Image (cartoon, rainbow, N blue to C red):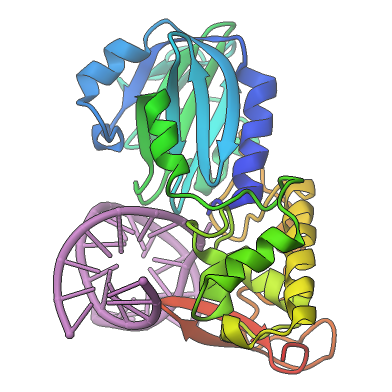
Length: 305
DNA sequence: TGCAGTGTTGCTTC
DNA sequence: CGAAGCAACACTGC
C-alpha cells in the first residue's frame, strides 16, 4: 500500500481524530504476532491508559507519540490500514452474539446490525487489532496479509530509523542539489534508486512509476546515464506527483483505505501503474510492463525515453 | 484448477 | 559493494 501520500493522509486524519485521546486498552486481537518487539501480554499492559500526544510520519512509518516519551510505531507494509470510528452506537463483542446494536468481530470481519457502509467494504474486513479510545472512539487495524509491524518504542528507536532513511522528498530542505548529490552516489536503475528508502524515503512502486512517466524517463535507465535536464525533470516530478497524491488522499487501487474506511482519489489519476495494455492518455500508445528487480514497472515507450 | 501477481522490507546468497 | 532471490501472508484474476 501505503506509500508516502497514503501514510501522510492517515497521519493527518489521526491528528484530527485521536490527538489528546487516551488509549483505554485493547478490545480485540486475533494476530498477536503483529506486535514485533514484545510479547502481546506486555503490549496490552503497556498500552493501557496511554495519552496520545501527537502523530507524525517518517518515511512510511506512523509515529504515535505517547506520554512518558514513548512512541507507538506502526508500519503498514503491503495491506495495513487504520480505521477510527465512533463507538457510541456500537459495542465491541467477539462473542459472536449480537444483542441490541453490537459490532462484533468474527474472524476479522465486522458483523452486526446496521454496519456503516464504509465497514461493509470488503477491504475493511481484515480486522486484527482493536483499541478502545476515550470519548467513545475505537481504532482498528485492518491488514489482509498481516505483514504490518507494531511496536511500543523509546526515542532511541527513532535514531536507529533515522540512520536507515534518506531525506523526506516533500521537506522544503530537500532541493535539486540534494537530489543531485543522492544520484551522484547511487548506481543502478533510476526506478530502483527512487524506491530505495536509504536514499529517498516514502516512494514505492506506484509513485515511482507515475513519477518516471511524469518526468518522461524510462524506469530502467541507469542513474549514471541521466542528463542534468532529466535529473531536474525527475526531481520536479517527485515533488509534483507526491504532492498530488497527498491532495487526492492516496491511491486505493487495491486495499488502501483512509481512517474512515473510504477510498483515496489518486487511482483515478494513474497514468501508467497497472494500466498494462491500455492506451497512454498522453500519446495514445500502449502502456507496457517489465520486471525491474522483483517488481513490475509500467511505462509508455513513446512518452518515456 | 492452478499459479502468477500484489502496495514492503530485510535477510541471505552469489 | 550491489543485485537478485526469497520469505512473511492471503486473496484476486487470468
